[in-house]
Length: 240
Image 1 (cartoon, rainbow, N blue to C red):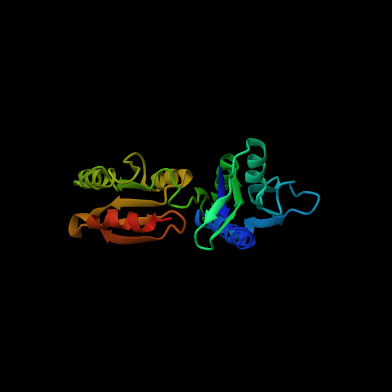
Image 2 (tube, rainbow, N blue to C red):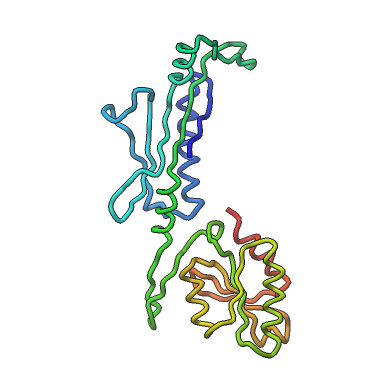
């Protein structure tokens, strides 16, 4: 996954630093732990012939630090070579400074497969709850394949009907899952393992005041909201 960003000569290192910071922050936004990330500067022996500066963003995999993405200042190498061999003028007239020049290129190049692997390794956790070892995939809510599960506490007393209505209200907007099979604890664990960040549980109090329990995957803490607020709750929590 590559991007080439064209800049005015003389501003290239300024933009190089901008893109270094922006790409690093992107990995933080998708949930990668900062202690698992670092920059690696290319020394003279590593620097590509077309680059005046280059850094890698590296992730600490179980098998060691490996590159996720490279950020390079490619200078005007690409366009100058194209111009040389094509015989075409590839200079750009900059109306702001009233000058023509060959643009410099700041390139970012990220690996999709390696980023996915880093996200999964970063998210996987085994937690001792005191009663059992809980397996949980702590994916950023934006990345979680299923955003929420809707669960009736028991399959009677109109709870499944209410839960089904909540599920139907969420389904046009998010990938959600309805589960009424097994104990509530076992259902929570199933959602933990696949990274579902929130569970809405319909229980006896729902029948009285219309509120449902919202369980947070990472903390296992629960709060109550009105069933009509479920969609807005997810929209707020899932923003990247």
